[in-house]
Length: 435
Image 1 (cartoon, helix red, strand yellow):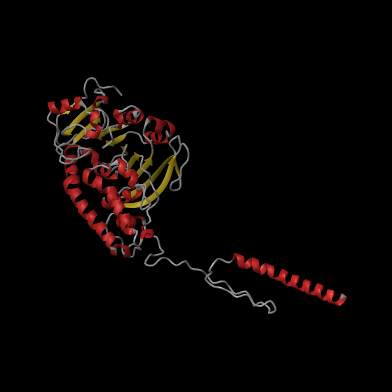
Image 2: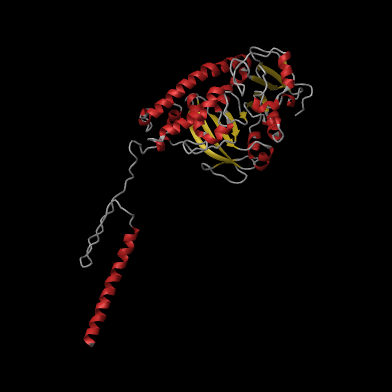
């Protein structure tokens, strides 16, 4: 009986020793990923383990027909604009996709129509009535612009710096390769939809833009900036995400970086030709109301640091007709040599006759119904009294050229080249509020 008990004890100790020897191997197996590329079979306990082999190098395999090399910024811009990409670009294969070919055909047709019916008329008008705007300018301010670089660049093609601002988000850098396959068509269709109103009517529809630019496919304003730059013959040389602190100083940031009191923005540097002077676009997502500027004053301080320039106001929702936008209006009236606007910008009565000389073009049919409360009887009286200059293109909410209103306000004493053809000018109404 004593011998039998001794055997049981020895057997139990042997089992415990074997179990202890296997514990590390169990821990290693738990660390191996599920379904590893190479599976190894553990040798029997009684057999000496062979030397540990060098683990195989795992090379990530890209999805079918999707190059592993990222596309360049300019090829991406050309692709989104429906233009040919460079030879050897990883996007070349995607240009064979019927979805992109439909997209390119849409843009070619839309851009041809836009240039013939709109942009050519703008250039002709400007050559006659505002030639100074085509010269090199230090800065152009375009408040309430959203992503409308198109008209800022058309009115002021040689500005050194463009400063645009709106509530629309910036979004991430567009990565076309991630949409290879069935998702490419819907992504391009959403971009076409986002641009449809500005290509046909000269303005973005704000409510639709808020929906379109929040979609997961090509969201934000960056794809639209890419399209306008590519179609205008520009080459992008740098893109940097920035934020403005409350003093107006710019700091490099990451995409989508947010912090209380900071204003998110993007800086895009581009050229029209290899030997042309570089130009810079700044776009900031910010609230231009008085409350918004109080909470994020960095944007206005940043603009003030650029001195006086030219300003564009178009399809601005008549925001400065209502209380709560005094700060941005004050900035424009104190930092603009020339303001080019439709009737939705600064109210005509807010230009001080001692400081501003106004010229009028086109016609004044009053606001569209949704803004009918902002009808300006003083402006109607001016158009009835004078013979305004011609306007061969549509602009603003009254996009038909026969109903469009364009006002050029030049600060008296500013160095502005005289126009080649001069329509009658008019001082602001005598009851204007001095600024």
